[in-house]
Image (tube, rainbow, N blue to C red; front, top):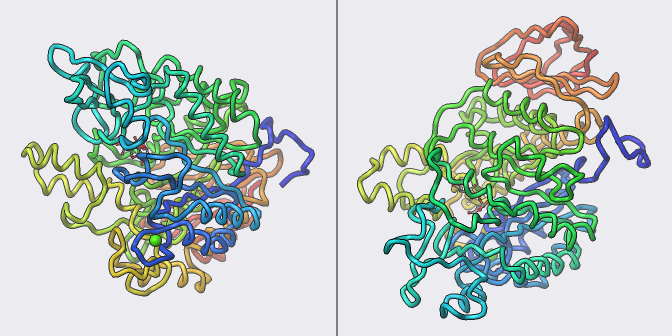
Length: 565
Ligand code: TEU
Ligand code: CA
């Protein structure tokens, strides 16, 4: 990268988290060290060299806190304790130390829109109406004998649950075992800041903040507006005090440490984005936008087709709307989405490897900090689910009960959509080697089935194969790291309406790079714009000896990064 005392590049303030490559670990599915079928912290520590060798700078650890696991750790019972299945606080300290030893950083998942219903606060709050901790959560009396309003839970049904003892309802935007905290209560906020400091003082390097735009609620709890389009996230993310709370959190906690923050911004529009991430406002560093990963989503769990021009339009819009004071993220998958190669690539035997490499090329040459989800560096694919019993996810099971069991939706139709959209695709165990359970566990059964393609798709094989997806990721990461233009350079989409080719440049002064991606199985001769000359192929996912400066003869799913003029 450029000289260390240079503080801006292309107008952007230099920051370590803008230059970092981030890797997400879902601990339950990463590696099991003690043979109980569940991934754990010691398992992660044992594979840190694998992550480091890939070129990763920062690990994002999905929740590892004490939890009854109604939603795999996104329902926290005790924020200062490690989930028993994942190990002990000593294992956690050991992991933090081992990460630091390797020159990497680690961020934790901050889940503070809600807690578990088994959290001591809720157990207490639930006891009586006039109890002193009642307003740690959000309670409301019935309205005309029914729920206080028509809000729905993301996991099916009403967002309100009646407590028979007191006759009142509590709010839960997710499952009824995940009651929403009342951020209006300053004691709640103080407790949250305190637990954040607890982990920061242990040396963690920041947080990914779960559904952070939902923390502020409209205090009149109105029904959905007339304009409601079946997407509750846009209503829930529009609470009046969100920015006050984030600025307070920044003053009280974030500004005191050299850390990074990334908010999971479900329900935030592009226009609202600068309010969260403009560096002059002192709220968050970056957010995850849902536009790309939800491009092919209809209402709720429903899949709908997507097109390449739609995808390109999102990246161009981000680039146009966000100025030098804002920074973005790029990600194609996480623990809530299908596998990147099955989602945006082509996971057929012939094209799985090239298309996974093409997506790596895109992820690492677009503008924004790239996040890689565990296993995507191997080109892991969706799981061939056949029946409802094979799913674990609460979102799937609740939707099945609410819509299929009640005969509103046909089971075949539901399963067909799940094959595309289920969160469980990305939660199957990480594939380490070609043994029966992919080297994930020595238990007779892992907590969720291993993908049957683990004999072919696994880390040990990929590490030994010079042409593997993993090796390509490594090369691509290393190219990004030595090329400031790929981090801070201007972005320009050369051909927004082309239905199969995505071609764009990244430029920093005279340093220009041309990226050409063929999102199809067809061979395509692609001519570059007249004012652009391709000098040299720096990296490609298909062996090529072509030296043509004006056009590229691309094979199916071919990706090239050129130095250009
Ligand atoms: O997810 C936020 C969220 O609302 C969606 O991405 C979610 O996956 C759901 O499918 C919407 O239909 C976060 C976490 O990432 C997710 O794992 C948790 O289940 C959720 O919050 C609750 O904590
Ligand atoms: Ca274990």
